[in-house]
Length: 391
Image (tube, rainbow, N blue to C red):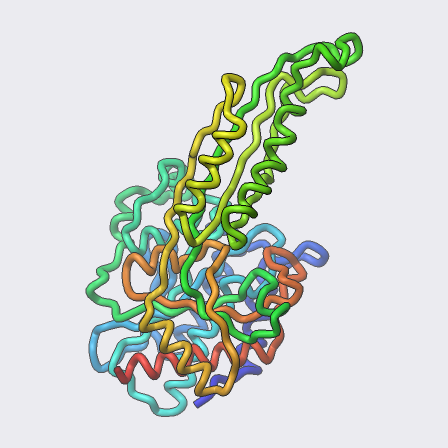
């Protein structure tokens, strides 16, 4: 049994054109006009495929094909994008799920489980908060800022509570996604079975100096906050590499005050983000950073801590068997990016599988995956649904 690859590729392009601007990419942020257009497009696909579709109180779209029992195998991802994003991030997992349902129906397959395809809202976090839709779906706590922002879109705390599903109704959750990195392409491996989603920690580092005149203050009398921060930034990178070669460290935001070309910086603030499957190594890294650099002029504040999330071992084996059944190679790997699977794994047994991203590029107009990988990945998703349904 196979999916209709040409139809899937066509629909990925059609959905990608909603919110697309030449030279910029696809902008379909949650709760925007283009997002609503995209969701309506997907809803029509669900209904034309024989699924009962509905939008919940926070904007998640689900389509259900009734099985012999009420226990649900869910497949999904998100359909919101970053500004100027690509057409595959999230959309692949949703449309591949719909295509899998079509393949089952056209083959006359009668599933024991009900099959649900989920198009989560606001995974990206540009509007209300990261994975807002799947947090509501699974009953995970929302960030206080997210609750405040949601009100702007007429979403109340009661709506969020009412969007919660019952985990007892679910057998599992599966997600097909682009890697959004370059490992699979570099190693020429067509599929990555996801072991888990990395833990994330973010820290705000504030370095105090003394604001002074840039021309009349000699170099030996300066207390320059930016100069003091510079070795801390490179030092943090070295610490992360030394503690765990799989850890990533990013310092992508720096603020300098007063921010004038002719004034010595009196304050520098920068953000550290550390990601790793082993969150104990994150703790070791920041402890070493503090021991080397913390002083009375420096404050280090943790403002986000997200534990790593492990995927279900039995479902990983299902994906492995499906890859072997299709005579294709695979590897096991962590996901360095956050996904709705973080919340779904806390709700029901969950598994994810990646296909390669060309050039390792995502969140970009140049985001791309090979058609043959998209089709193969969708067929493996279909095989996994059937294998789980028969268990």
